[in-house]
Length: 163
Length: 159
Image 1 (tube, rainbow over the protein chains, first blue to last red):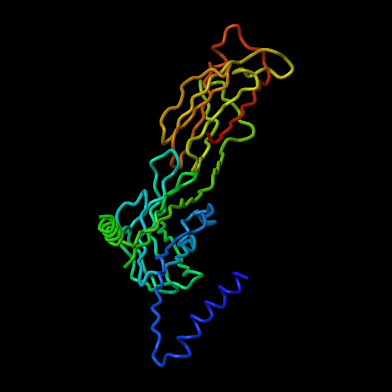
Image 2 (cartoon, rainbow over the protein chains, first blue to last red):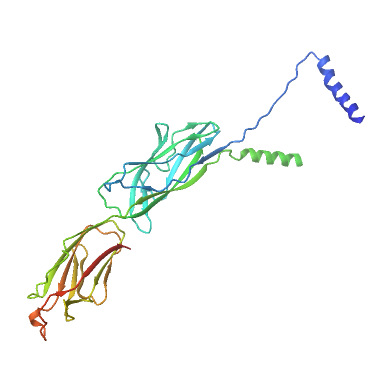
């Protein structure tokens, strides 16, 4: 019984202004969208770096970093553990001070957006919910060096920066 | 007072930058396969000139990207050529030189296997094998006439 009375009371509160008022009702809605960003890429698998003639392969598609960001604009920065300078990275032979130099390019579609270490890429806009896949390529120049057998590795750090 | 504090806290929250640099770290690994090409000029049989004190067996040409290798020389008769149909030994030793690494060993008795281990990568090289012995005529008591034989095995393996 109490519930019925309460409902009637509420209904009357709502009904009265609607029926009686000729003015307008102003409703302010506040929406808060939390900034969100992520960048990820599956660990690349080990690849053979020499071709059948024992020359360095000219290029290697290393992987596809995926960026998801609702920032208005963003940039990517790439760093290398064994880089020689801003343009030249190096793959280091395990247990030895032997390095295979390489250059890299980070693509957005067909456009190179970054090719220098620690140098932010061109600015890109907010991504779709599913994200924006980029492509990372390494480039090698053969110089007839006889590269010792073994595993060569480098560690890359990708940073996403709000622009 | 509480309202003032709450307002201050709210203001402080607003002052914190809302952007943050997201990061990930990944390791890129490339592999260089082992290659080892050994070309030999050592015949399956080499006649030793017993009127001299040494005979060059031949060379092993080594092209490799091994990060170090081990050369082993093994004598089937423990550094002796043995007379066929008999047991008389004609002792010898071995001298090994490399055009890159220099002299690896001089007049080494092969009573035990000879082993040479290289460290690090090696450029292409040639290894020459020479056997050393006394002239047959200088051996006392004289060796019985006959053919004296030993079998040498050369092995190159990655470290």
